[in-house]
Length: 635
Ligand code: ADP
Image (cartoon, rainbow, N blue to C red; front, side):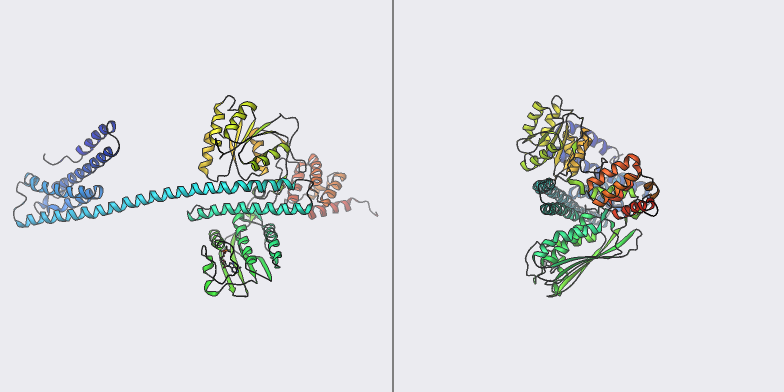
């Protein structure tokens, strides 16, 4: 009866005290008291259990090795409660032995000097256990603290990245948007249009680069993934060579591309990463060569995995080369070879390149001789699109490549007079957006910050608002919230223009009441696509193929042309189609396909897809052979 009631009292004590404390004192004292009560509870529980085991299970031991069950009890108490609790457990155990033992065993606990020595040794060992447990506990607390600190530092880094990406994307928006707009301008000469194309492609590359720098920090955090889609390999490689040609030619270097015949045109790979890998290597070759030839060679070899091949990319230059002792070091971040005379760049390019290649399951090596040149060799496993359904291919490929991005649609006739409000503090962005929307036939107004936006909503009642997120005076989130609370504020469509790449930011926008968001830099297709989806407006594409997707599909395998149905088309339609394809004028081809579609929409769709994949000669050959067969004999 004198044993502590280990199972009931501490818990009920804790529960009772806990409830009382919850209602009363708060803060520091409250927490400390709770912890102390919890430790006390554990201590009593452990000791009670120790006594019970000693008495009932190990009762046959009588007065021998009394401490056998108290050691584990002290250990448990010390592990949970630390030094004081552990030490207290050792002392309470000794008191139980001293005063409780006569009650259990009907004879005194200390009979001779050996019993006393045993108790002192137990107390000493118990104190040691308590010290060790305390050290372990402190180490654990320190680790938890360090983890918390690392997490908050990581969060700060994410915020920094979000801000930086916003700052970089905003000016890019103007570069990409205006160069695209100018490409539509009829007064611009073809040569200037080509230059604009280059500006545009460089801008797109810069955008990809920004994304990749963001990705690099994600690689460090282990958050990066490979985003495979169907891509036109030869098109991509040609684009990259063309992108660097002006720079190479300015230095008197010749730049050539050698694509082995057996390399498939369409592959499945992470386009942005592949692009950056090749661009980094080619860029270095141009940068570190003063004369001679640079050769980008692409070949393939079989891969163990089915539906995949190993793409072999080699970049050879006759430049300054790298010394043997430095060849491996150049892949380290920020390393620039001592022998290098040209001091441009950051020394990050090859580190990123190698990270991407490793991530994609490939490898990179380099052979170089000082003064003679270098060759970088990359082996990269990539997928073959054959394993995917044709529909998937065209869908993902058209999403990846949208050459028709620069076409501006027009509002289809017979619709409301749509009023669109742009709330944006950056004048380049608002000018760009208002121009493309006006050209498409909308009524447009611009407000320069959130507060003006709310005012414009009150006085003008737009149907749709393009809302920038970060603005002075009042930001987009606040403005959206305010507008939603106004009369009629629930009916207007609000879509946020945000440069942020972080999901939590997007969730915040939607919570604030935005219907959707479009990421900057804006792409015409996304802008009009979003308005179609959110507002239900309809567009016509004047120079385009007639279907609403507005995209000439790229990539994938062309569907087989059904020669029989092609032959069954009325002669004038076939002749018209042949002439249109012969002219290579997309407007004419579109009109001709429209006419075919009226007679046979399935055939028209097949033709369209073939044209999207540049199968002009195949279609022309088929049409011409039919024309010959139709021609009366002897003519
Ligand atoms: P960066 O080009 O910005 O300096 P990189 O990581 O791309 O950074 O390259 C690191 C270093 O490797 C370069 O500074 C240069 O010393 C060396 N290097 C890379 N490519 C070549 C090349 N084709 N020829 C000679 N040296 C090269």
